[in-house]
Length: 138
Image (cartoon, rainbow, N blue to C red):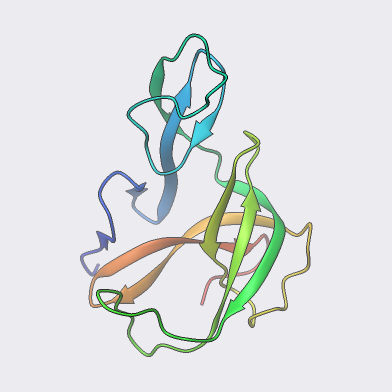
């Protein structure tokens, strides 16, 4: 098994082939964040108390676009080509941006059920992504 290194610390947890998105939840107001927050960012919160949170491994595609240009340095990706980025709504009500994999860019319909996975950026560096349920990731 090749070594896998997350693109950023504390962004997701990897247990074998299973990924889990990490973030925060304020127990005072119930708001969630990805990545982790050290304080509640909700201006209406009257009892801020931020705790580590782990989010469900599934979500629903809320919107998407296709990234047609390679981001500038320090971003690195092996064999870069245009890819879809989705706004994924998690069961907790939070929406996160992530690459979409498992289907050609633009071919995952709005409201599709997705599951969390990982993709290789370069060398052993990986990041989280979402793929349609029932599909294998690319």
